[in-house]
Length: 360
Image (cartoon, rainbow, N blue to C red):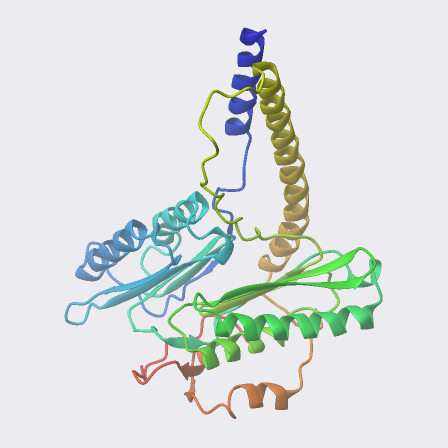
């Protein structure tokens, strides 16, 4: 009996370990202009390699965010990574950053400026400082192929969507880690899941501005969508796509000492039952998320095959006065360059703006 139980436990453990999970870095897109390039084997490339190595070695930080720079005369390079808020402190964050720092120079071999997005992280670097600054462009728009009208009333969905993303923007900007999620019931069994995140070097006001700007660009006819920007990202779906907060640690109180009277057979039965339950849960969860991701990725692939055109998708319309009020009448605006609108996040102002990477 004991040998059979041991075999069952070993089988369960190895099955769980070998089952494909979503810790791999799922590539979404990258953008890098060829207007500013460097010569291979130059000082700039050496500095870039040092920067990427520094970023990769800091992927295990508890904040899931890190920025750094390598500065030498005329060869400065600045970079940062941002892990998705719900995977901070996990292998998914470290794997994603490691993948991004390795793939970035392959996808953009001689470009000085680039931003690359994965499902679990974002990496950006440039020859100009962009720290503590919210850049309006480049951005990437993606949407779910499922239409909102196929699951609920369109007007009701739009009302809930507008309220949800506005609340997500407010909660994110006031969060110390600049990350927030929100779940709102639409109707019956339909729940809307919202997600917002900013780079952690932004002030609350600038983070809110960035997310509300993204909110004006999300598709309102789809059951899901996301806007990815260098300084923030916003997403909504009608299925859970982010992990819930981990439960609090179990109490460490000790009971009366003495020999346990629980029968061994009972312990074995409980362990086996738990193992099987966990296995079934993992299998079911992976199947559901994989199916949802497949549907979403097809939409992204269709969009990326064009010129990142979002004109064919209606966007959620916010009252301009609302955004104007939340940003104090855009009091932090520095100007508007080729990269788009530039907002400061601290007294340390960076006047430069990099070339616009996203076609208007």
